[in-house]
Image (cartoon, rainbow, N blue to C red; front, side):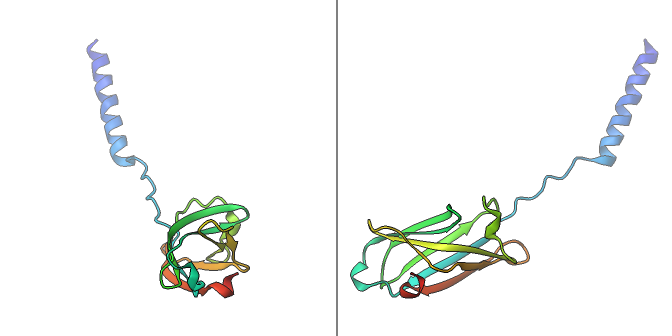
Length: 139
């Protein structure tokens, strides 16, 4: 019986030493947003001031992020934060996200930009910036 206790004690010491040396796997750190960017659509027709809008980034039928607000001073501004779990890998092209901009004013049908907007990524996986487009040039 005493012999079994010695073996059990040695086993416990080996396990403690092994866990100390090997440790536990580090859990990967959560990465921040792939980009955070403010987009402003300028020169919206003046009769639309005060109306609500919904602005989205879309591609291949996927809506990645949506932001709403009220048109003031003939412009609509939305701050987009897109996380790292984008469902469509074709959005990332040469360190830049390429998406179409959708803008819906009031109850109108949403208008979608005719060309893609590019959102750059910094080396740390995030990007904070801003860009503005005129309403007439987007649609």
